[in-house]
Image 1 (tube, rainbow, N blue to C red):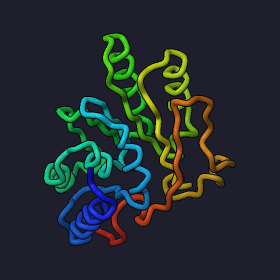
Image 2 (spheres, helix red, strand yellow):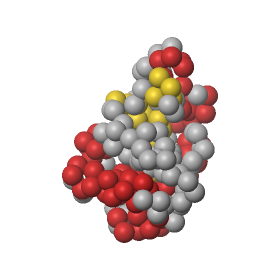
Image 3 (cartoon, helix red, strand yellow):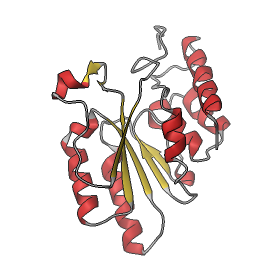
Image 4 (cartoon, rainbow, N blue to C red):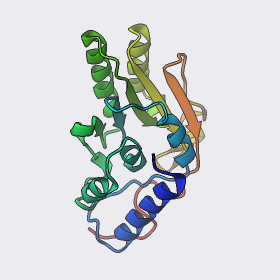
Length: 197
């Protein structure tokens, strides 16, 4: 498993490539959540599924995808929709778009009698939306092999989550949910330098 320092170095390299104009597409950088993700991925086993939103670089690395492959996809303009089906890793740039996919995978595992698990990641903005609550309720009621991880940086894109939704903690009612808080050192999108595509 990669270390905190290795994860940070990877994103610093991607930020430098973006700021130099070498990535001609949007990027969403990870940061400030290295320790939380390393802890979560201690439960991950090869064969499990990982479904993410547009901020997924760290998760790809932590589930064992070689850094050179992850970087190649980012350099090709796919930072916000990394997909490596051969590693059972999927992401979506659509808010909440990964959740019904993750739910369907979990339902398939249960129906087939498999032992794999699904790790579904989402942000705190998405955790206040209907898609998440429907998926969480369905997964709980049918006891599907899935866990939802809310990555709460207290921002709904660039707006304070408390101002948008009137609360900071994500609503939940089940043990299929885990939330952690962190401060993202990068802007919502990009790496701090205005880059024209």
